[in-house]
Image (cartoon, rainbow, N blue to C red; front, side, top):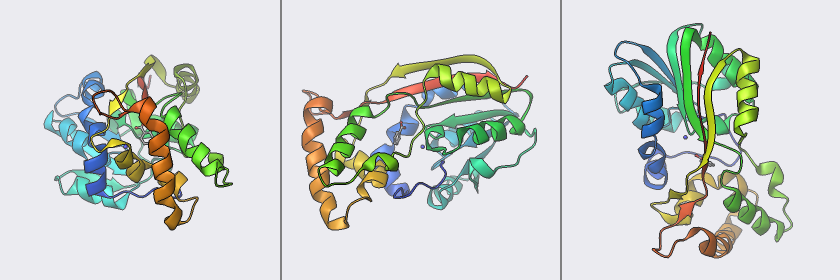
Length: 255
Ligand code: BEZ
Protein backbone atom coordinates (compact mmCIF):
# COMPACT_ATOMS: atom_id res chain seq x y z
CA UNK A 1 0.00 0.00 0.00
CA UNK A 2 3.23 4.31 2.39
CA UNK A 3 3.78 3.96 2.83
CA UNK A 4 2.75 6.80 2.57
CA UNK A 5 3.20 10.28 3.68
CA UNK A 6 0.44 11.27 6.02
CA UNK A 7 -2.78 12.02 4.13
CA UNK A 8 -5.60 13.87 5.91
CA UNK A 9 -8.47 11.51 6.69
CA UNK A 10 -6.46 8.38 5.89
CA UNK A 11 -5.73 5.97 8.71
CA UNK A 12 -4.47 2.41 8.70
CA UNK A 13 -5.36 -0.54 10.85
CA UNK A 14 -3.56 -3.82 10.21
CA UNK A 15 -6.77 -5.85 10.65
CA UNK A 16 -8.80 -3.65 8.33
CA UNK A 17 -5.99 -3.59 5.80
CA UNK A 18 -5.63 -7.38 5.83
CA UNK A 19 -9.40 -7.89 5.58
CA UNK A 20 -10.25 -5.25 2.97
CA UNK A 21 -7.01 -4.96 1.03
CA UNK A 22 -5.29 -8.33 1.33
CA UNK A 23 -5.45 -8.47 -2.47
CA UNK A 24 -2.75 -5.76 -2.64
CA UNK A 25 -0.06 -8.24 -1.63
CA UNK A 26 -1.83 -11.25 -3.12
CA UNK A 27 -1.64 -9.63 -6.56
CA UNK A 28 1.97 -8.56 -6.07
CA UNK A 29 3.50 -11.77 -7.45
CA UNK A 30 4.35 -10.40 -10.91
CA UNK A 31 6.16 -7.34 -9.59
CA UNK A 32 8.17 -9.49 -7.16
CA UNK A 33 9.03 -11.71 -10.14
CA UNK A 34 10.13 -8.65 -12.10
CA UNK A 35 12.44 -7.67 -9.25
CA UNK A 36 13.77 -11.25 -9.06
CA UNK A 37 15.28 -10.87 -5.56
CA UNK A 38 18.56 -12.72 -5.11
CA UNK A 39 20.08 -14.37 -2.08
CA UNK A 40 22.34 -12.05 -0.11
CA UNK A 41 21.44 -8.80 -1.81
CA UNK A 42 20.28 -5.78 0.16
CA UNK A 43 16.79 -4.59 -0.75
CA UNK A 44 14.76 -1.63 0.47
CA UNK A 45 10.95 -2.02 0.36
CA UNK A 46 9.44 1.48 0.14
CA UNK A 47 5.95 1.49 1.64
CA UNK A 48 6.17 -2.02 3.02
CA UNK A 49 2.76 -1.85 4.70
CA UNK A 50 2.10 -4.89 6.85
CA UNK A 51 5.09 -6.67 5.30
CA UNK A 52 3.40 -9.49 3.39
CA UNK A 53 5.47 -8.88 0.25
CA UNK A 54 8.54 -7.80 2.22
CA UNK A 55 8.49 -11.28 3.76
CA UNK A 56 8.48 -12.80 0.26
CA UNK A 57 11.63 -10.84 -0.60
CA UNK A 58 13.26 -11.99 2.62
CA UNK A 59 12.21 -15.59 1.88
CA UNK A 60 14.29 -15.37 -1.31
CA UNK A 61 17.34 -14.90 0.92
CA UNK A 62 17.69 -11.11 0.54
CA UNK A 63 18.45 -8.78 3.45
CA UNK A 64 15.38 -6.58 3.40
CA UNK A 65 14.60 -3.31 5.13
CA UNK A 66 10.99 -2.16 4.92
CA UNK A 67 9.95 1.41 5.52
CA UNK A 68 6.48 2.81 6.00
CA UNK A 69 4.95 5.99 7.39
CA UNK A 70 2.20 4.16 9.26
CA UNK A 71 3.20 3.14 12.82
CA UNK A 72 0.41 0.54 12.92
CA UNK A 73 1.53 -1.16 9.71
CA UNK A 74 5.22 -1.03 10.67
CA UNK A 75 4.29 -2.77 13.90
CA UNK A 76 2.42 -5.45 11.92
CA UNK A 77 5.47 -5.94 9.67
CA UNK A 78 7.76 -6.23 12.70
CA UNK A 79 5.43 -8.87 14.10
CA UNK A 80 6.40 -10.96 11.06
CA UNK A 81 10.01 -10.73 12.20
CA UNK A 82 10.97 -8.17 9.55
CA UNK A 83 13.34 -5.21 9.82
CA UNK A 84 10.60 -2.61 9.35
CA UNK A 85 11.23 1.03 10.15
CA UNK A 86 8.87 3.94 10.67
CA UNK A 87 10.12 6.25 7.98
CA UNK A 88 8.50 8.41 5.33
CA UNK A 89 10.20 8.03 1.92
CA UNK A 90 10.20 11.83 1.62
CA UNK A 91 12.66 12.02 4.50
CA UNK A 92 14.83 8.93 4.11
CA UNK A 93 18.56 9.45 3.83
CA UNK A 94 20.15 6.13 2.90
CA UNK A 95 23.32 6.55 0.82
CA UNK A 96 24.12 3.87 -1.78
CA UNK A 97 23.29 1.07 0.64
CA UNK A 98 20.96 -1.07 -1.43
CA UNK A 99 21.25 -3.34 -4.47
CA UNK A 100 17.56 -2.85 -5.22
CA UNK A 101 14.58 -0.77 -4.20
CA UNK A 102 11.15 -2.37 -4.43
CA UNK A 103 7.76 -0.74 -4.04
CA UNK A 104 4.24 -2.09 -4.46
CA UNK A 105 1.04 -0.03 -4.21
CA UNK A 106 2.77 2.75 -2.33
CA UNK A 107 4.18 5.39 -4.67
CA UNK A 108 0.71 6.79 -5.42
CA UNK A 109 0.60 8.05 -1.83
CA UNK A 110 3.69 10.22 -2.26
CA UNK A 111 2.87 13.93 -2.11
CA UNK A 112 6.22 14.93 -3.65
CA UNK A 113 7.20 12.19 -6.11
CA UNK A 114 10.29 14.06 -7.39
CA UNK A 115 11.73 14.19 -3.90
CA UNK A 116 10.97 10.53 -3.29
CA UNK A 117 12.59 9.52 -6.60
CA UNK A 118 15.72 11.50 -5.70
CA UNK A 119 15.84 9.77 -2.30
CA UNK A 120 15.42 6.36 -3.91
CA UNK A 121 18.16 7.13 -6.45
CA UNK A 122 20.54 8.10 -3.63
CA UNK A 123 19.66 4.93 -1.76
CA UNK A 124 20.86 2.65 -4.58
CA UNK A 125 24.34 1.47 -5.36
CA UNK A 126 25.52 2.03 -8.91
CA UNK A 127 23.86 -0.64 -11.07
CA UNK A 128 21.05 -0.99 -8.53
CA UNK A 129 17.50 -1.77 -9.64
CA UNK A 130 14.35 0.14 -8.88
CA UNK A 131 11.29 -2.03 -9.54
CA UNK A 132 7.72 -1.43 -8.61
CA UNK A 133 4.07 -1.02 -9.33
CA UNK A 134 1.48 1.52 -8.26
CA UNK A 135 -1.70 3.23 -9.39
CA UNK A 136 -1.41 4.83 -12.84
CA UNK A 137 -3.44 7.34 -14.81
CA UNK A 138 -7.14 6.56 -14.61
CA UNK A 139 -6.82 4.42 -11.49
CA UNK A 140 -10.06 4.23 -9.46
CA UNK A 141 -11.59 6.88 -11.73
CA UNK A 142 -15.16 5.58 -11.34
CA UNK A 143 -14.85 5.31 -7.57
CA UNK A 144 -13.37 8.80 -7.30
CA UNK A 145 -16.00 10.35 -9.58
CA UNK A 146 -18.75 8.79 -7.52
CA UNK A 147 -17.28 10.07 -4.24
CA UNK A 148 -16.81 13.56 -5.68
CA UNK A 149 -20.38 13.61 -6.99
CA UNK A 150 -21.79 12.52 -3.62
CA UNK A 151 -19.77 15.24 -1.89
CA UNK A 152 -20.87 17.83 -4.46
CA UNK A 153 -24.51 17.00 -3.72
CA UNK A 154 -23.69 18.05 -0.15
CA UNK A 155 -22.09 21.29 -1.28
CA UNK A 156 -18.55 20.01 -0.71
CA UNK A 157 -15.84 20.35 -3.35
CA UNK A 158 -13.87 17.16 -2.70
CA UNK A 159 -11.30 17.73 -5.42
CA UNK A 160 -8.75 19.16 -2.98
CA UNK A 161 -9.06 15.92 -1.02
CA UNK A 162 -7.78 13.80 -3.91
CA UNK A 163 -4.67 12.36 -2.26
CA UNK A 164 -3.05 10.26 -4.99
CA UNK A 165 -0.37 10.54 -7.65
CA UNK A 166 -1.48 8.51 -10.70
CA UNK A 167 0.86 9.38 -13.61
CA UNK A 168 0.89 7.82 -17.06
CA UNK A 169 3.89 5.74 -18.15
CA UNK A 170 5.46 8.58 -20.14
CA UNK A 171 5.31 11.17 -17.37
CA UNK A 172 6.66 8.74 -14.82
CA UNK A 173 9.46 7.63 -17.15
CA UNK A 174 10.37 11.30 -17.68
CA UNK A 175 10.54 11.80 -13.94
CA UNK A 176 12.76 8.73 -13.55
CA UNK A 177 15.11 9.94 -16.31
CA UNK A 178 15.29 13.46 -14.90
CA UNK A 179 16.28 11.88 -11.59
CA UNK A 180 19.12 10.02 -13.32
CA UNK A 181 17.62 6.56 -13.80
CA UNK A 182 17.82 4.48 -16.95
CA UNK A 183 14.27 3.27 -17.61
CA UNK A 184 14.06 -0.36 -18.71
CA UNK A 185 10.28 -0.54 -18.85
CA UNK A 186 7.18 1.32 -17.75
CA UNK A 187 3.74 0.15 -18.71
CA UNK A 188 0.20 1.06 -17.81
CA UNK A 189 -2.47 -1.65 -17.77
CA UNK A 190 -5.99 -2.10 -16.51
CA UNK A 191 -6.42 -4.62 -13.72
CA UNK A 192 -10.04 -4.85 -12.55
CA UNK A 193 -9.48 -5.99 -8.99
CA UNK A 194 -11.93 -8.25 -7.13
CA UNK A 195 -12.79 -6.79 -3.74
CA UNK A 196 -13.17 -9.46 -1.05
CA UNK A 197 -15.29 -7.18 1.15
CA UNK A 198 -17.10 -5.39 -1.70
CA UNK A 199 -16.91 -1.67 -2.29
CA UNK A 200 -17.90 -0.96 1.33
CA UNK A 201 -14.67 -2.57 2.52
CA UNK A 202 -12.62 -0.60 0.01
CA UNK A 203 -14.27 2.66 1.08
CA UNK A 204 -13.71 1.85 4.75
CA UNK A 205 -9.98 1.36 4.15
CA UNK A 206 -9.22 3.91 1.42
CA UNK A 207 -12.15 6.34 1.26
CA UNK A 208 -11.14 8.25 4.38
CA UNK A 209 -9.74 11.36 2.64
CA UNK A 210 -13.15 11.94 0.99
CA UNK A 211 -15.44 10.69 3.76
CA UNK A 212 -13.67 12.93 6.29
CA UNK A 213 -15.11 15.94 4.45
CA UNK A 214 -18.57 15.36 5.96
CA UNK A 215 -19.73 14.85 9.54
CA UNK A 216 -19.50 11.31 10.83
CA UNK A 217 -23.28 11.09 11.01
CA UNK A 218 -23.55 11.81 7.28
CA UNK A 219 -21.06 9.18 6.18
CA UNK A 220 -23.31 6.08 6.11
CA UNK A 221 -25.76 7.93 3.83
CA UNK A 222 -22.97 9.07 1.55
CA UNK A 223 -21.50 5.57 1.37
CA UNK A 224 -24.94 4.12 0.56
CA UNK A 225 -25.27 6.58 -2.33
CA UNK A 226 -21.84 5.71 -3.69
CA UNK A 227 -22.57 1.99 -3.43
CA UNK A 228 -25.86 2.47 -5.31
CA UNK A 229 -24.17 4.53 -8.01
CA UNK A 230 -21.25 2.12 -8.50
CA UNK A 231 -23.13 -1.18 -8.35
CA UNK A 232 -24.12 -1.21 -12.04
CA UNK A 233 -20.57 -0.19 -13.03
CA UNK A 234 -18.36 -2.32 -10.77
CA UNK A 235 -20.46 -5.26 -9.54
CA UNK A 236 -20.42 -8.17 -11.95
CA UNK A 237 -23.26 -10.55 -12.79
CA UNK A 238 -21.48 -12.97 -10.43
CA UNK A 239 -22.04 -10.50 -7.56
CA UNK A 240 -18.30 -9.77 -7.25
CA UNK A 241 -17.22 -6.14 -6.99
CA UNK A 242 -14.15 -5.27 -9.05
CA UNK A 243 -12.38 -1.97 -8.47
CA UNK A 244 -11.34 -0.10 -11.62
CA UNK A 245 -7.62 -0.36 -10.95
CA UNK A 246 -5.02 0.76 -13.47
CA UNK A 247 -1.43 -0.22 -12.61
CA UNK A 248 1.84 1.31 -13.67
CA UNK A 249 4.61 -1.30 -13.53
CA UNK A 250 8.19 -0.26 -14.10
CA UNK A 251 11.84 -1.24 -13.84
CA UNK A 252 14.75 1.21 -13.85
CA UNK A 253 18.47 1.15 -13.09
CA UNK A 254 20.77 3.60 -11.36
CA UNK A 255 23.67 3.74 -13.85
C1 BEZ B 1 -4.19 1.38 -5.42
O1 BEZ B 1 -3.50 0.48 -4.95
O2 BEZ B 1 -4.25 1.58 -6.62
C2 BEZ B 1 -4.94 2.28 -4.53
C3 BEZ B 1 -5.07 1.98 -3.21
C4 BEZ B 1 -5.77 2.85 -2.42
C5 BEZ B 1 -6.31 3.97 -2.92
C6 BEZ B 1 -6.18 4.25 -4.23
C7 BEZ B 1 -5.49 3.40 -5.04
